[in-house]
Image (cartoon, rainbow, N blue to C red; front, side):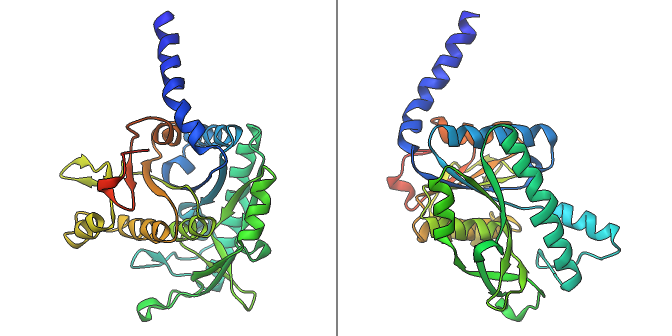
Length: 292
């Protein structure tokens, strides 16, 4: 009993300097993967983000939900097509995206957080022109109603955060003509973090972090990431995450973390322990202490 209490005390003591450091700071969390689909992990995530707000950290969540979109589309007889890993979104699929992401998925997340007194509010990028987009046209590839973000309504988000409200954002943007567009959730989280000049951007996914030779890479800067992408140590779905991370860093975000959402309370372990559990992306590795 005494040993157990002593261990808990050590955890709190280790966390104390981080709590003091981050009070009043803004964290943006991209929520996806198993943490968004497993019931136990959903619960611990809701507890984690609520705890962050209770100790004075301002939290913004941007969530995914592609698996649910695919499932609902299938039930409606719509085929899901992907081009270079991105969902082709015609008008019918866009209806499904809005219905699922801005509807059920968003409200399920908000409801679970609020059961823990997290004071969350659900939004999509259409609300208050939160995520302003134009049609994605990179490389001449037509993805239909897929948008790239050209603006974030910082005033609206700041107003919510200053009033102790946790925004939970579905990655649906709106064009200047008022049309809704599907947006990659990683890119949306990066854009929001950059616009808010967040202290941290955290990506929850289904991998431990960046791996090299079977070992976790605890920290990397842009040069190291570029070398690892050039040699395909970093490849496939990790590439857009890494690019989004450095876009956010170059726009003023202090640090980005890639962590394994399959681990219970991974968010707290990464932020409030000396070693952390994932990969942190920093401006300059040689000058930045690990997981500070």
